[in-house]
Image (cartoon, rainbow, N blue to C red; front, side):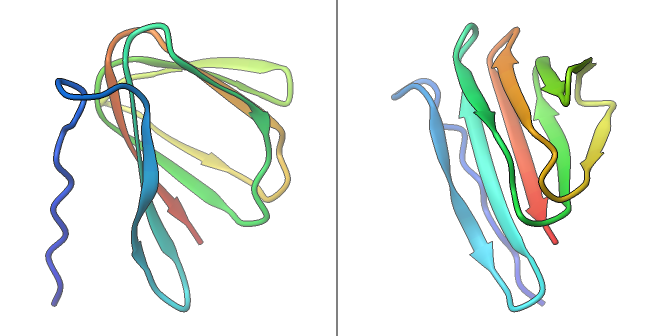
Length: 97
C-alpha cells in the first residue's frame, strides 16, 4: 500500500503541473490551474484518465468540447489532440496508463 498526498497550492502559486507518482505500468500527475489559465493543444502517447478533484474545466478533444466537474471522468485515447482551460480554480488528477 502507498498513500499519496496531493496538496492544493493555488493559494501560493498559479499553474502547477507535475508527476506525483511513477510506476512501470502507469503515472499519476496533478494539474492545478487558477481560473482562466489554460494548457495549449498537445497529445499524450498513453491512454489518459482525467479525474477532476475540484472545480470546472473545459476540454477540447479533437474538436469536441466537453465541460468537466468533480462528478466527471474523461478517458482519452493515445495521441488524441486536446487542450484545456480552467473555468474556475481546478485541481485535476491524470492517470497515464
